[in-house]
Image 1 (tube, rainbow, N blue to C red):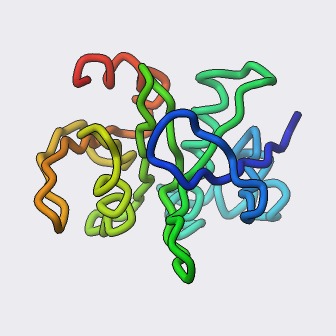
Image 2 (spheres, rainbow, N blue to C red; image 1 turned 30 degrees about the vertical axis):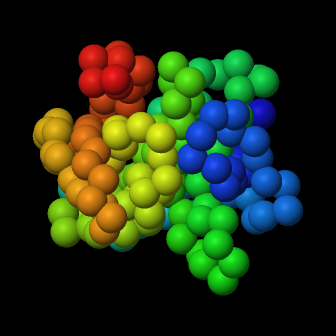
Length: 172
C-alpha cells in the first residue's frame, strides 16, 4: 500500500477507462519515503524550498500524495491523460472525476510553465474547466484554445488540493 500504479486514460470524458497497453506512472504514498529512497534526506533539510532539491519534479508527487489522501479507498485509483494520437508523448498529470466530468489537473512548479498539453485536452473536453496546481496564490484565468474554445483555468496552491472538490463545485 506504499505504491500505486496509475494508468493513463485516452478519453476526455467519463467513464475514465484506463489504458493498460500504455506505460503507467508509479505514485508513492508519501513524499518523505521518496526522499529517503533517493537518499537526499540531508539535502531536503538544508534547503529553504524542497523544489530546489528536486528541480520541480517533486511537485507531481506532492499532488499525488494529496489526491491519495483525499480519497484513500483501496478501490480508488488515480489516473492521468495521454494524447491518443500515435507518435505523441504529451500527458496531463492527473484527471479527476467529478459530477460526470473528467477534470484535467496539470502540476507546475515554475512560474512561466507552459500548458500545451492541457490546451490539447481542453480542445476535445465536453466541459470548460481545468485545474493547474502551483506554488502561487489561488486565481482563476480565462483561456482560449487554438480552435477558439473558452475555458476556466483554476490555479490552486498545493495546500488547496484537499478541498479540490469544493472549489470545483463552485465553478461547475
